[in-house]
Image (cartoon, rainbow, N blue to C red; front, side, top):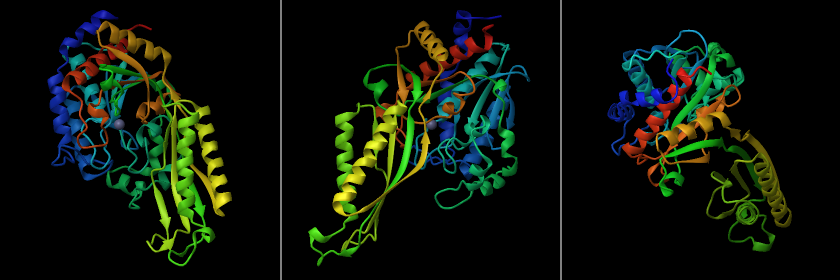
Amino acid sequence: MIVGKPAVASGKWLRPDRLQADLVTLASFGGLANGGVTRPAFSQAYREAVVWLRTQMNDAGLTVSTDAVGNLIGRLGPAEGPAVICGSHIDSVLEGGRYDGALGVLAGLECARALTANGQVPARALEVVAFVDEEGAFLSLLGSRAMTGRLQKSDIVRAAASDGTRLVDVMETSGLDSRQAAWARRPPEDFNCMVELHIEQGPVLESALLDIGIVTSVVGLHLSRLTFSGQAAHAGTTPLDTRRDAMRGAAEAITRAFEALERDFGPDVRLTFGALNVLPGSSNVVPGLVVMTCEIRAESEQTILELARDVELICRDVAAHRGLGFRRQLLSYDPPTAMSARIIDVLARVAGELSFSHHLMPSGAGHDAQSFADVCPTGIIFVPSQNGLSHNPFEFTAPEYIERGLRLLHAFLCHRLFASA
Ligand SMILES: [Zn+2]
């Protein structure tokens, strides 16, 4: 049985050039003239990309299947027993980049090819997985949540795109029966561990000139809807002191919320008022209603809940002295998700053996791996993003960084696939 360093050394079978070629080919599905991609889950481009990827997995000697929600799974090694899951996603946001998600899937595929080229039959199974709809065109993290049992039937029935298209209908177009979606759920015994290679999507690694980020946790995300209600009135005839201006209240609350954030919370806490609806929305009418989103992300649950409470208190105070009504609705809350300490240790040790500079860091973005954190040991590897740019056609990671991410992923997989423990 091959353990430790010999498995690391077998990285000579990896072909980083083939991974680069795959990234280019995959980017042609839904490809844009500026180099980016628009490939939301279940779109025509997405379905064509899945057909292409299925062929690549077959050619690599993997046993390929599609589960009940549309996750594409390529398995190597024993047909039964727990598998080491190496996955990410090949759907994209509108006008997204060619590395987000795609890198983790295609790097997993390249690792599988290296194993078969080297004649290595792993003692444990490896599954390379392309999880469906990570980006949430219909339902964020659909594939990974379905596989780990974190979805209710009602979530699938209710899910729809922003244009109203229902998930159950696009699943049918893709040959999937949404009534069977529960079959995608697998028991924890099916998973040995889960690892995801992903671009950082932020500036930390690049600015510190580091090769690799090892994720300690995925930050929690608290999303609420804040509504200020006043009275619509004539913009010319209504004096300032008699107005109940919902927009003025919202603006004051936003400013005070950021002052509180900068005064009372650390620099790693994120606060975003990203969508704002002003009604009736006329230049000559004092706004009677403002509905806005408030998104908070942080590594600590206590921090998230404290900031959410402070923002609410500020809003209520502003509403009281401006004569406005105020209401807060919680839309969703995903608590922070810690990655496995054991996986972090192994990744850090293997990165050290490969002489890659690395850094432990939280992930500010959500990833498929977080769905697995409660069911098996889970880890995420980051490689640098140029200018910290992602969800953008100009998203880029230099080939030398991609190669280091690939080599670390491969060495980690060898460790898990061949080690006796
Ligand atoms: Zn992603």
